Length: 133
Image (cartoon, rainbow, N blue to C red):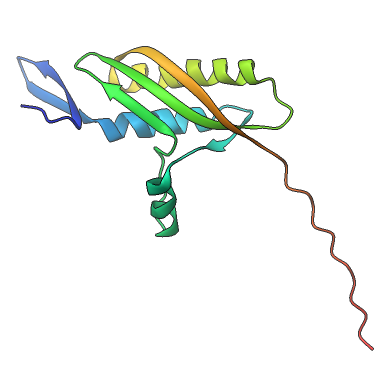
């Protein structure tokens, strides 16, 4: 009897294995942030509040729909300025699919990438000398 927040894989000889949707989200988020060219993940208001309270939200910018044997993932990312967006999106799709399938045994049917913005490199702050008279 699973609720909406968990998937169940049954093994009749040993028992039941339950993997929470949040676990799949975290795996996807970490796999996506490993890709060169991704500046960060775009989260909603809840993610921002969690970070303000000091909790690192590894599933920020990730939405998953998980069934008993399959998963679908939506990634909301911010790319670095100057990268080729289709290449970064494809690398993210492949990395997320590989990570989820390897770690959970689920079949990933789709990884949709939504580009939410472009991150610009922070300009070096020039420190001006202050003369003391």
